[in-house]
Length: 524
Image (cartoon, rainbow, N blue to C red):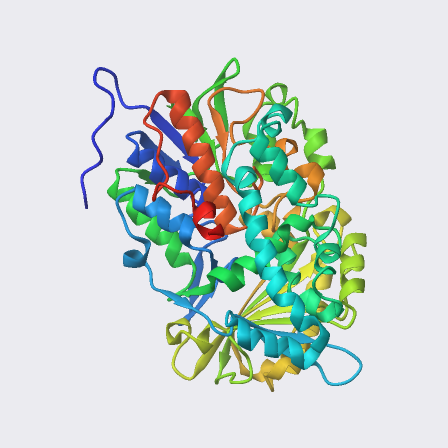
């Protein structure tokens, strides 16, 4: 193991930063802070790193707990480079083609689209379903390159108050992003067929939102997939979190596992450390990576949360939740691609049901079969399947103790219909996570798997800031803070937070690697 970096201070002790939570944002912040010379301690309530971005092993099967693919690795590559490491040396990334299979249920036989980054082949896929929409593909890609460039100031900078919006780059960006339109409305400029629009908009589910309500700027999600690729991490996406932890440890970061933080200590408005098991651990700054809605009321006294009081947190809008099935299956599943998205004929009704707190009975779903690409994910002759079904979060009072058994049957029927015959007889391992499980076992507020929702009124300065307002010395990372959810965005948010904290403590501010920003390069 390499020795910790030398301190940048000449005549005073190294600044100590306490990081609460070893999820993606906490790991990215810890790496960069340590590389900049701070002493960093990460407090993690579980025995492993990664939060929801971890890989579980059981009876020879491997399953990603939450995210299952790696999108737009450039940002994390730059973070690794700024810490003296190379992402590709730490993990094996496999670019997928096709990226995923989309199955559109309808009146007759389902239509199938194998999404590919090869634009000529993608045009043919579209032509087979909606010939008139082929012409919109090139325009979609061209205009979203420009949109991504316009989005850079929002993604790469802190927005702590309305004043931060009144810069020329910000105002130009906001005008280009069509904030008055939804993703589906914006896509109508390119594609007339609703199925093709869904192929380029179901990605709003990565934010737990409906394409009919999600702001139009998020058409860049599908653009990023086609432009920069969808990657599988050999052995599971948790390998990225483990690689981040290895680099952090080489830089001198201390990890304290199975060590939940009871509260953040304050002297007046200034964070002075954390309280753990009755012990006060002093710190010059605290970075909170725990789920915002779940942790903030527990960790920060109410008088220091005027902008995010308990009432405000409770009344905020949150994403949907998910019902999860992790299945070890005897035999192979050749009909199932690596990533599969089944869009129900009742897709719009599914969304309306979830928004009303009703569990869909003919749900749309996502089925992950990493064994199709990576034989390390299951024993020889077996398959590891991961099923995600969007369902209401806990705000609606669904009793999952009563619903779990009947909904499991619905889920298994849907998997069997996709091409896994005799699935019940073939199950050799099974794990279920419901919205209640996300809340109870994984500390997710309201079981809202994708955090605070991303409508305009909960973005920009309306979202919790990277430097937490009303306090000093408390900083936030993760999907519940600016700029938002999704791994690339969380990593970028950690860069924003890290630079703020370094500047506030007088530490060297981590430069971007290479000199140009990730999004500037992507837009060229």
